[in-house]
Image 1 (cartoon, rainbow, N blue to C red):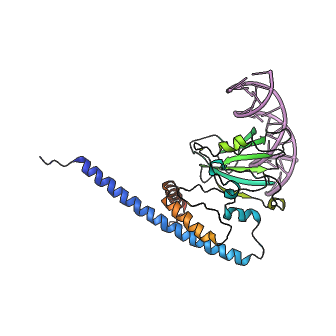
Image 2: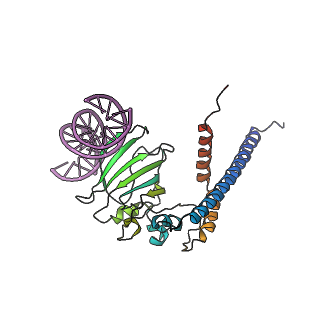
Image 3: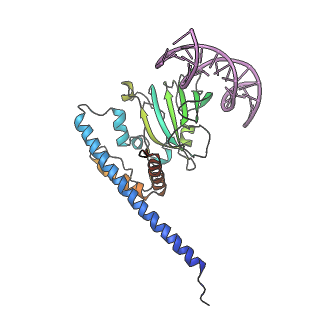
Length: 259
DNA sequence: CGGTTTTGACCCGCGC
DNA sequence: GCGCGGGTCAAAACCG
């Protein structure tokens, strides 16, 4: 009569798995908080040690000046191309997508592709084709550590304007590419905004539920970090990515020499 | 048909 | 000088 319901067994198993995942999630959240505290300490130490100000380009990252330039999020490009002499942009893409296309508001013509020694993923070479004689080139290659990321290296300065239609396409809801991290070689020129395409790489964490209210005060950095931590720990994509990274770091740890 | 992509060949700088 | 690796060229293929 009261035969054991196989569904009950399944529910129990799933519940156990869920509890296990919740524990792992909590552990990862704690790890993230520790990392955040360490970052804060390092940041404060750096500020104490450095006699001069951060370069403008660096302050730009912490102050999220993208939100100053693009108050309307619907018009905010996720990637801004630097006009600095050389800069790097990391763009998150669908790892299943084999193409090496980084939509950044400019039109590019591919002129070469190479497999480099240290990275099995091919590196693609592009020239800007929006204007004749534009000297800007870019190299695009998948990150060795995480194939979901494309690393684009820009060289040169554009001698023309950006196509706004291409730039806006970046912020379309269906766009899968998101600029996550960027870096540039700071030049004296890069700190001086000279035109709308001034040398500035900006950052949009694009966090679900995060408060991106702009603030001009550096004192807000701590509050912002806490907000980011809270938002990130609520983001299932982030926790999954972090879990993968932790797992990878564990796997890649050098094994102790066997006796 | 014109612009773009592909891909093998070539060039050049660097380390040994 | 030689080999290696990264960057570019250019002809053919492809595409709208």
